[in-house]
Length: 168
Image (cartoon, rainbow, N blue to C red; front, side):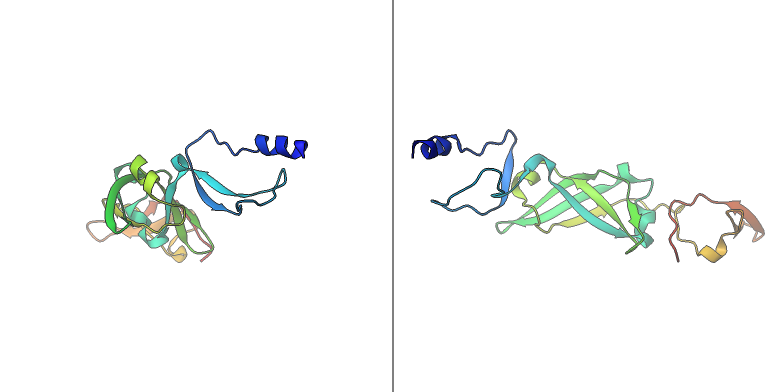
């Protein structure tokens, strides 16, 4: 009995960061064992919003990340909240679904209020980048150039910089 009492007194869950409990599977009076998982927690400061952008919309965000204004809107206990955030990464397209993932850093107040898995509305405001476009693979010549028309409607060969190429 004394050994059990000593073990119970040593049983303490401590974390040296500001956290939120995501899930737990402990009940009052439950027997526990060392090394067993009793729940999930996350650090509030690591909370981010993530979203997807279709490849056809990338001309709005490629090479323009720093100038994009991100508004994060959500409902917090019946009260509409809105904060500004920043995109943390350059979008990377995944061949499976042709969407690019973006991650948005949240302000401190939003990290205190939001929970993992909560839905938020993200509004991205930015300028259109007319130098980024989707081009059919058939239009690209073997030397990596495409044919374009100049201001006088004369055809000219132009070198392009391909930032993403899919299998289609």
